[in-house]
Structures are given as C-alpha cells and as structure tokens.
Image (cartoon, rainbow, N blue to C red; front, side, top):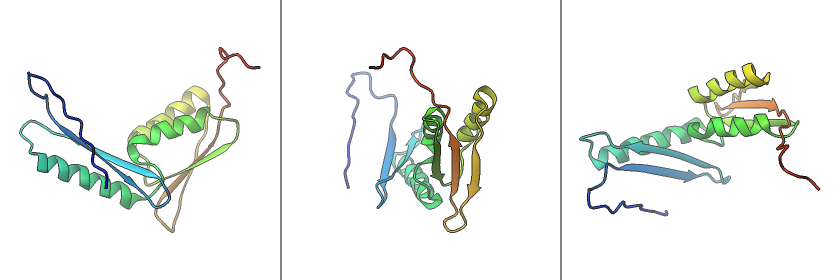
Length: 138
C-alpha cells in the first residue's frame, strides 16, 4: 500500500480537501475513485465516500473506471483504422454522450454487447485513422 499526500501550504488556509484512491488489479489495470469534501463534511465521510465508489468500480469489472471511459473511447475513435475493443463495467453517462457525439460528428458507429460471465460490457469500434497533418514525416 502506497500513500501519498499533497498538502497545500498557504497562510489563508486550504479551500477544502479531497481524496483520490487508485487500485491496481492482478492484471495491471488501474481503477480509481475520488471524493471531494462538501462544506461541513468530515474527513471520515470523504474517505467512506471514496472507498465506497472504488469498491463499486471494482465490483463492476472492466479494465477502466467510469471516470476515464470517455478518454479511452476517444482514443479508440481517432486511432488507426483498425478495430479496437474495450471492456468496461457499465457505460457511464459521459461515455454514452461522447459516443452519440462521435456518431453525429464523425459518423463513427460503436458496437456494444454484454458479457454474461462477468457482467461487464464490451465496446468496439473501427478508428477513423486521424493523423496530425502538421507533423512532418520522413
């Protein structure tokens, strides 16, 4: 177990506090959760909220947590013109919104199917092959 702290040292005091938790699976996948204190919340409440959220991410399965699903889907969409697959626990609302926008703006279609054995969801798409035209190639 590694514990890191990032303490803000200012004379005016800290505006609040938060907690980020990261768990590594036996396959090397990183799942994360975070919680921010609301006014009047105790550190114990923030810790309990973050730990509960992390346990929920672990329980859902998948190789990526719900907070980072849109990033992974974006990389799949603009990657090489080849099929990419991603196993997630359940699709988050921001991930579904991004898939709708990619369909509307780029015409990209995602295939989604549930996995019965571990209750996860697999998302697949064929990348559009986006490349940086400003980058010189040799």
